Amino acid sequence: MHEPYYRSGVFTNEYLNISAGWVSIKNSFADCMPVVNRKKDLILIYAGENFVDAGNNIDFNDKAKGAPFTNAQYLIDQYEAQGEDFVANLNGWFSGILIDLQKGRVLIFNDRYGLNRIYCHRNKDELLFASEAKALLKVRRELRQIDEHSLGEYFAFGCVLNPKTLFNKVEVLPGGSSWIWEKSGKLKKNKYFKPHDWERQEALHGSTFYAQLKSTFEKILPRYFHSCQQVGISLTGGLDTRAILSYRHIRAGSIPCYTFGGLYRDCHDVKVARRIANLLGQSHTTLQLGENFFRNFVSLAEKTIYISDGCHDLCGAHDLYFSKLARKIAPIRLTGKFGSEVLRGASTFKALKLDKRLFDEELNRFIERAEGIYRKKSLGEKLTFTCFEDIPNHEYGRLSVEQSQLGFRTPYMDNDLIKLLFRAPQRLKNDKAITLRLIHDLNPELLDIPTDLGFSRDQTIYSQLIRFNRLFSFKAEWYFNEGMPHWLSRLTAHGLSRFEQRILGTHKIEHYRKWLKEKLAGYIRSVLLDERTRQRPFFNGPYLEKITERHLLGKGNYIKEISKAVTIELIYQQLIE
Image (cartoon, rainbow, N blue to C red):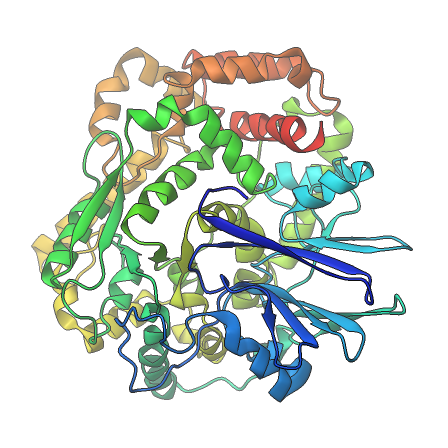
């Protein structure tokens, strides 16, 4: 119960020896639990959404409560009609249990990507499962231990690879699971989906693939606008939200747009998004990062780590801050998230390469082992790795924090779209031209406005100069933030600060390298120089103290090390101890 607008309840049945609770956001798709059939022998508890075609006669801007498919009640009818196969026909991020009193069993299931997590622990007497790991840690003290192998993965690339978690003997259900728990105590670990089901499809020829991509994209977009609640779009200056807004059946003024803004100036995202919203006749709001964020940073950071079970870190506190602001505009956030990953092969899942002098020898061995596992996994089919490893592992933490505040939707993880993308010909995979062509064919006016990086349909020398300038400033800002080498950090402290002030905020809204050594220095010292932190068995305490002071004095850039060290300490304080 993270927020006052949550609802909750409990269902208990002594015949099956089961007790299950649920939490949902008020008026969301799942705010109708439990769903019970007419005979009262089937009980469904569901979290998440399901995106279906509501029919051509539906007005997708209609907010009427009676509109079909806007809550989960109809899913019980799907189960009665299709049996266990109904899970395979669900589309979205979801998890749930189906209690069948007549057959004396419980079906436990999740989406095929595993993005709506189910944490579980099994021993000889019981199966415990929850959507947040802290629920299991609360009732079983013996689970409150950090797994050393998982800790190696966490420090190797910032997350733990499924099915493991940070916590000893706690796992997550693999994506595409439909486990059956019998009254007798027998557990069947079924899988209704495997990535190979999509990998083995025959590749399409270029023109055929694009024609199907365009028709599929037009078909799925209405699913994500349809809701009994207000849908708002977090509009950026890139291509992916622009492609969503190329859908032609959006009434002017029906979709409030907003963009996250930084501390120093209006970034290119804000400037471009404002023009796009104006072109389409939609309202636009800049949600500004201000001093209120820093005044409340400690509570935001701690809540970010607590909500995500340690899957999101210190430098993700702004995601919680912005999500709280976004909810005031619309309770459902429509976003272009993962468009660049699935369409153009982008990835943020990379080895962190933390300073190994920070850790003891044993943990360094676990880190090296984890890096080897990552390299092996990344050698396979790129889209498979993106959808079933990268996004569910690396992006889950951020998503869990954002979804704690509002509904989160993106058409780029729609089953129909991902299934089709596995049939893309090799030459069209990871090609920016595909997205540009989609926008051009659906609403070419949107390409008259250059993106945040300067891409547009204009190919004049002037437009190419704009593109070069924005790409240069994008790279430069990265070097003055997370990517700053130690030698440049020292120069910044002795004369480059004026250039830094000119470049910061042109593209990015978060600048934790600077914030940690200025606005948040006192908090960082209080956590990392505390005896509890310095004496953790896997840390080199004196070296932790050294890099903390070097960063805070501007003599080096240790943002990644500091962020992970503070995060793991808060995990211990909030979830273990």
